[in-house]
Image (tube, rainbow, N blue to C red):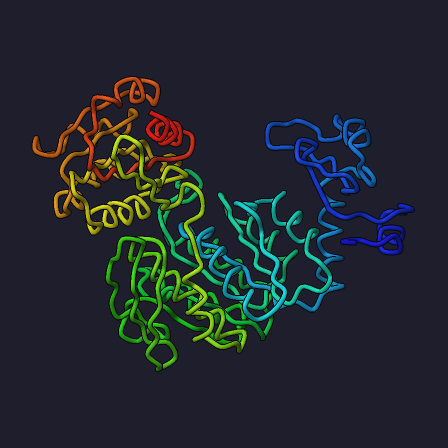
Length: 434
């Protein structure tokens, strides 16, 4: 049982235990403890209290504060090493890699999906079994101070920052401000703990300074830089992913990763650095990474009945992740054309137009045959592309889907990427069923 009667009696004066914790009656299971929280759309979860009871909930408790209380109690009763993952890109993929590698060393609990916000983090904590040895928690934020509240709940022993990129720019004046906000992940370490930092980041020195200011016990670095503790030497593409050569803590490491894109290889080194920080065997962890598969819509490769190969990056987008995805498309082998289907990137603030048009600079240097664009912001990119690259432009996803059967040819390798609100996953689904 996840939470026994004695624990819930002391915490919430309940007279029974619970096998799970839920904030959504649509996925609630019998004997789950249901928390009625206020959702981002303003809907009060307590409206569904009777539905939860009728579905067999172990009890109904009101409010996010109480869910956070249960999350803190979970940390108190469990001696797990807790790893926090944050960054502008690569959080979920890195979290999934961490889940796999730490599973080699003991009972491991990790956030599901992208449960990285004010609801997802305490829910993930509350679901952590008492015998967990390694807990992995993804943390996101869109404004300064948001990460701080999550960190106070998790109190991580190891903090991995994947990368700093222009995201949520309507709330930040600069990348330096984003780096400072991400550095909130160090604030509970208080003389101990390990910060795992990307050596290639333009904000690397700032991240290091912030870690030192927060009295972090140790800093481990990863990336392509010569002085990185976990250094990427080379990647070699295969049909299923990459063969990776690296130097980790001065030792040569060779491993395979079933996903394309050098940025994923770099993130894998950040994961191995976390293993080193926990004093587990890096060579065992590197071997385990061959079991990693791309999370849904974050680099999945799929073949369609029409003979298309889809690189599905439809979950989200910012300028850095867009550039990385375009490089991945360029590097992959294809019998046909390399086609980029790009939709608007959101939350980029006053410089949104420039962030879109500037993509032309990297596109011109890559092995890409045609660029199809979707959305008002991507229309700016469409207009500045050279004629040899300029594919069709569509105002919205509905128009794109309506004409998609005429856009692609058997053998094409197609990158599909855009911010989540653009609905590019609908194009992926359409092509897979056409």
